[in-house]
Image (cartoon, rainbow, N blue to C red; front, side):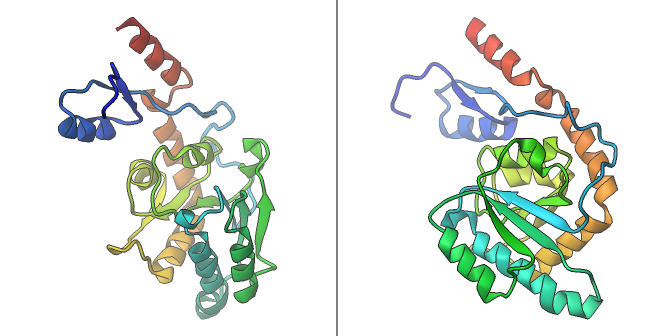
Length: 231
């Protein structure tokens, strides 16, 4: 950092600790990202659309959504046939430069009846009925979309990559292992989906416990900024 900041905000204690090691002469404070937490989510199992999943992001290469499409294609073909399962469905919200390529991937995998590009997402309540939230992003910093999904009671599946995935998902869903190039096994991913479907009610209880932490209190961000302004 070359600019004379008095204090630098981070979103978690682990980020603060890491940055303090690299920049011991700087001052850091934890300010959690603000989102609409848990006013509408009580932790009780809510009506949802079984086997329907959602993801929300910019449609860019780093979100790796083409691989998610192929994973859903694998579930609905070979994996589904082996284990005699019902199909799963995916709605993809967002816009971006990869939109045409993603539509091509949906057509290529013959998944046009189960995967839909939905355009921009409206109010966050529109995802509350989904079975879970899926991510194949190679990196998540703040993870706002993950937090919004949790605030609606949606369990998470994502790759085992820093920062937000490793912070939020272990207690609210399932991480999928990756290699050094961030590649993952479709089999590992669809097994995680199966576990989420089976354990949906228990994961919702875990989400309630996760959001009850003081860090995610509705006033936590406001209080952190007030403390900062008085220092």
